[in-house]
Image 1 (cartoon, rainbow, N blue to C red):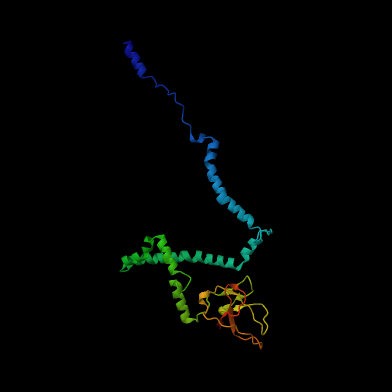
Image 2: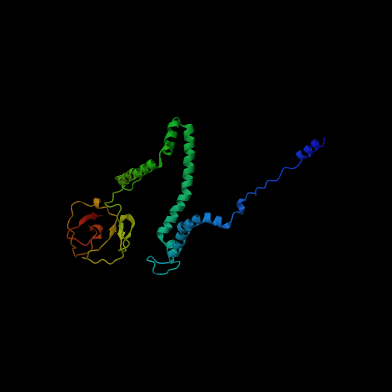
Length: 255
């Protein structure tokens, strides 16, 4: 009887406590271990992000060659430059117009895919670009929107429509070289200079953006000034690449 009671008491006793040490929590990790893991990421972040930003801000306080400190003058020129204001205006127009156009076109496409007779074919045309790889789509867009009208389909169409109503320009990409002259583009495709021009003296009107393959193939001698006055006809005597004057130069008449 006593032995059975002892067994019963032994069965009801609490289990023995394990002698194993408790596991260390993550929050208890030593500081140097965390720093060791974060150090490579911090080094890369500082070298590739923080340092370039800081150096750019510091460099913006100097002039173009970095020799003189100008303070905030560069920022003042940015916000007073006409090109910057044009970019801001174009960006504002894009932000205001693009979402509206996308929403309207999306609504029209959604209605057309459900209401037109050839809805399946229309869906195929609209969603086909999504099935094309980005590389192929980039090549197609490059062929369509190439700036050269002889290669880009979109510009070729626009140029053809433009030339059907307006006389085509001999050199459509010609523009003044602002670094060497005060020549400015004016309305009607003309150029204006504030320099003094005397009768019988050639006037230099530097232009850039003229493709060599668009120039006439047979050069002609430059016209000598008549000395009797300033006429209404301008002869463009081109010297490719800004080279020194040569005995013969290509010329084209500009109306």
